[in-house]
Image 1 (cartoon, helix red, strand yellow):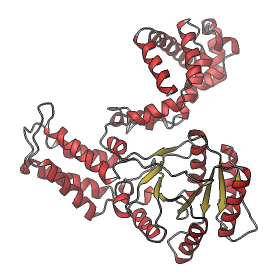
Image 2 (cartoon, rainbow, N blue to C red; image 1 turned 180 degrees about the horizontal axis):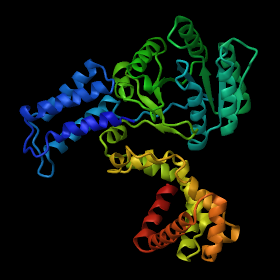
Image 3 (cartoon, one colour; image 1 turned 120 degrees about the vertical axis):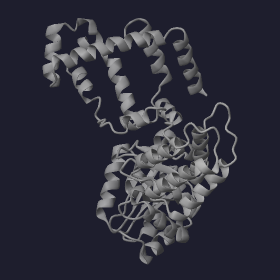
Image 4 (spheres, rainbow, N blue to C red; image 1 turned 60 degrees about the horizontal axis):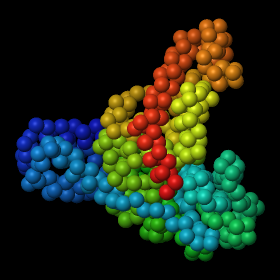
Length: 444
């Protein structure tokens, strides 16, 4: 995501390296490169020109602090302008009402149905709400079936009327059903088309007028670049939606939609889809996205993802086991599974400051832990519980069972031993204090 833009911006900052002061002469080439980088990212010429003009005005005449180099000052200026361009502050979704009603709109193929299910999962797991998914795409049977499958996958009810071809009536009936069953949020998935047309606009406008949702979200495929921005404008002119959802941001996207959609429709981006899994949905924070674009990582989001998987009581018990040298492969396996729930491994590594550029060209499989899990699953309960019994013959049997070689098993056992030692150090002194602080933060 944004790799091309990040590389071009990085080159533009290097042009100022070693300069004692930012002047019109040495800033001109840097500004020119920034504009090219934005245009290559599919940002419109008008917005790219205004952006670089704003950057230039802030850069010229700025005093370089003794702790900063000109390149560093330019990075800060560009960062702040990028964050402002994308909206400045994060805007929360509105889930007020009894029930709260959320209307989902967008073109066919933009990922509306998948997003509807992801949103339901988010509200259920992160906001402790009881959502109801509503299938109002009466033209595409596959959309109804898809919503049913996804609803079952995340444990959320899906309201359908497969014989009814009136989406307005279906939406009204679904809201009445939600009130009767005590569902707190109603998420209505609507029909899309391959392109904007009057019939679709009339239908979605009629649904909105009838149900009066507290939140209308426009879902757009970020891989369509400026076309996404133009489509958003057409929908907003008719619907006056409340926020934007960018899907497929983990794909081969140049980033133009994410960078410019806010300035065109003056509506915030609220969510970004970053994968196919139901957990692969992130809140959109403009400043954090600017951090990622400029290669600064996103440690705040990484910590938040970790805390979502962090159970205070479980961590306390694990701490005791580590202190008593009782940490075993069952515990190790559980830690791996928690890391996997946090998201794509390469994306997680990219959130660590300074690591993003190092891993951008690396092919890190989403199943990076697959071989480790296979080895652990090939162990007997006794071997997982007590790694000390793992002699040569046992290791050979485990390797055969996992479809790997004995060297790989030996390497894992060695890594496990080293990890256990490191974790024991963390449970004493400063490490124990840090864990205690995390416990206190989690209780607040």
